[in-house]
Amino acid sequence: MILSTIFGIVMTVIGVNETAVAGYKIITTAGNIQEKKEQERLKASIHEESQQILKDIIREAEKQ
Image (cartoon, rainbow, N blue to C red; front, side, top):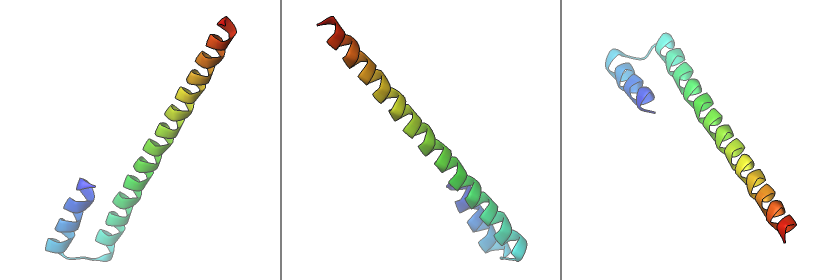
């Protein structure tokens, strides 16, 4: 997010041409990919935790 802001300021000062716009799109896309990977890691973590909770519940039920 910070990188795209800095890049936007630089584009404003220097001027916008096709190369700068393409560079901005690449940076934005890379940021979106990173966010997507973080979301997938979060989903995987939640899934893993829920599986562990279910295993613990089953083990407790077996003891009783």
